[in-house]
Amino acid sequence: MTETSLAPPRPVTILRRLWRDHRVWLASGLILAVLALLDPGQARESVIFTAGSLLHTAPFLVLSIAVAAWATATGADNLIARAFTGAPVVMIGLAALAGGLSPFCSCGVIPLIAALLAMGVPLSAVMAFWLASPVMDPSMFVLTTGVLGLEFAVAKTLAAVGLGIFGGAVVHWLGRAGGLADPLRPGIGDGGCGGGKVRDPKPVVWRFWNHAERRAKFGREALGVTLFLAKWLTLAFLLESLMLAFIPAETVTSVLGGAGLAPIALGTLVGVPAYLNGYAALPLVGGLIAQGMAHGAGLAFLVAGGVTSLPAAIAVWALVKPRVFLLYLALSLSGAFAAGLLFQLWGSV
Image (cartoon, rainbow, N blue to C red; front, side, top):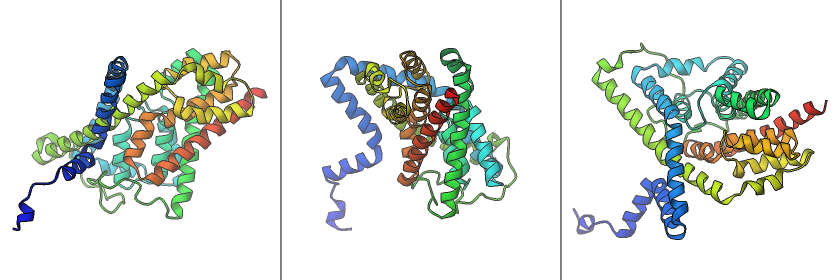
C-alpha cells in the first residue's frame, strides 16, 4: 500500500462526496440558511409550511410506501405488473381512468410508479396513470363542485382522464420507435427485474412476516423509498412556500384576466410557476372567473398547474431521465391547453 493511498482525502474531495450523496438535503439547508440571514420571519414560515405540507401528505405517502414495500416483500409485484400488460389501447385507457379516480396525489403515487417502471411495465400505461392522478381525485371533485360548480368539476375529471389517454397514446407511439427505453434514472428501482421486462409470476408469499429474509426486504424497501421521498418533497415544499410568499395572487390575476384564446395559452403557461396547490388554487380560479376570466383559461390553469406543480415536477425529475421528464412537461402543457380550448368551445355552444 503506497503512502499516497494512506493519505486522508482532501477537503475538496470530501465536499464533492458530501454534495454528491446529500445534495438535496444540502440545497434545502442552504435555502433555509440564506432565509434565516435575510428574512428570519419568512424562514420560520417556510419551515412551518414545509412541515405542515409533509404532514398533510403523510397518510398518502405511508399508504403508497407500504403498498410498494409489501408488493416487493411478498412477490406480488409481478402480479401487479402483469395487470398492466395486455392490449395497449385497453391498458392506457384503464390506467388513465384509475389515475383520474384514485385518491393518491402526484407525490403519494411515486413509489408505485417507480416499482411499476422497474418491473418493466410499459411507460405508456404508467404515463397515463401519472398524468391523470394529480389533476383529480374524489375529494377534489367534491371541493371543485362546491367552489366552481358541477359542470367545471365534470370537465376537470374528463380533462384528467383525457390527458392520461393522450399522454399514454403519445408515449406508446414514441416507444415503438425505441426512443424511451430505460426511463428510470440509474440507481432507481434496482431491486426490480434486471432485464426491464415483466417477470413470470412466482408463488406469492402473502404472510411475508413469517420469513426473516422477506421482513428484511420489506424494511429495506420502505426505508429506501421513505428517504428518497423525504429529501425531494422537503425541497419541493420549501420552494413552494417561497413561491407563495413572493408571487402575489394579484400578479396572477392581472396576467390571466380577460377572455378569448390568449388567456387559455397564458393560463397553461402561467399555471406552471404560479400554481399553489390543488385546494388553494380553486378559490383563486373562482375569483379570476368572477372577474371575467374565461372558463377555458381556468381549466387550463388548473390542469397544467396540477401536473407540473413543484412537488409533482421535482418528484418526476428525481425519478426519470431528463428526456422522459421533458416529455412529461410537453404532454402536460399541450394536454392542458387542449382541455381548456375544448371546454371554452363547449361553453360557447
